[in-house]
Image 1 (cartoon, rainbow, N blue to C red):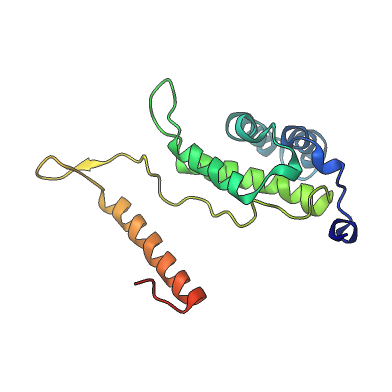
Image 2: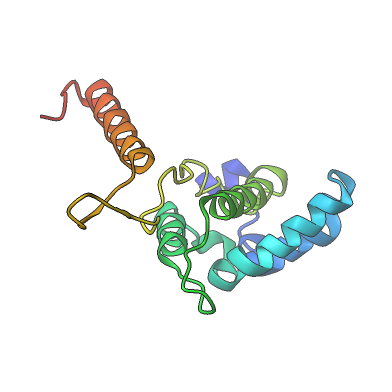
Length: 168
């Protein structure tokens, strides 16, 4: 009943994320973005988004799948170099997936809402290069430590605001 009230096209929501992404890149986005941006979106979709999410049906995508996808990108290492993907491409890939799902939800009513809308882009890379301290032990750089402390403080502050507890 809720889907009828929302006027969600249930049948349209069964198309794959890949099919809808290609539709957006070919038909919808060219009129609203520059050719360079469109080329960048297509490249990003081909490298970061579609290999992992392309075979999911739009209606089957969930926040948990999106979070697992972002976590997997953070753990991925390039086969040629062993280097992890950078934070900026991961953030841009998440933003592109969100934009496509916004279109599926708000523009085309294929799904009732964007399941990735509340996923926050990562601010710290778990595979970032470590530095060695005076004793030769691996330690986080000051910048990495500050990122972690910032994230912990933000979480504790949010937890205190939402639960009335300071998390201790």
